[in-house]
Image (cartoon, rainbow, N blue to C red):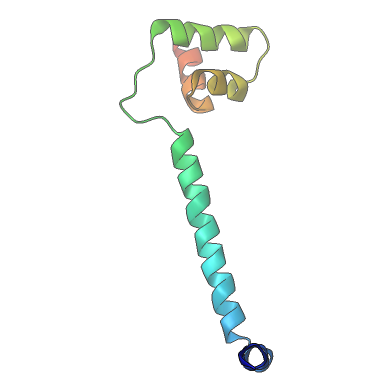
Length: 87
């Protein structure tokens, strides 16, 4: 009986569906933001000269900036910055 009432109210009023979609969109956006933040290194995180050299060697051997960054645990922009400084 309750299921029929809920189904009937949803059929007659699309507002609950709109609200649920909005909530889902917000939750997905928040989760994506958290994943992006988890991938980013902390601002004060330092990398050893050996790690930097390893990333640069990977790029020199043909790996992409993204692949080299993933191997070290940093972002591709950081590897690009190291590459510019080394040049």
